[in-house]
Image (cartoon, rainbow, N blue to C red; front, side, top):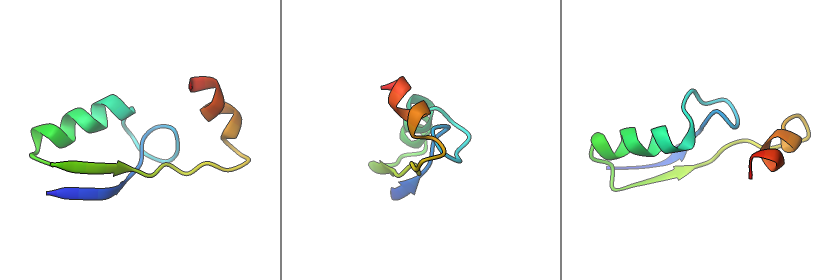
Length: 50
């Protein structure tokens, strides 16, 4: 199974990236794409986390 459109707490998702990946692995996913939204409203937050 593959999901190429997921979001994390960096935009409008509910899980941190590592937990999203962990849960996908438990459910048997072979690939996921993290597609968080970044724009002027959250860019500073995203940059500070890198």
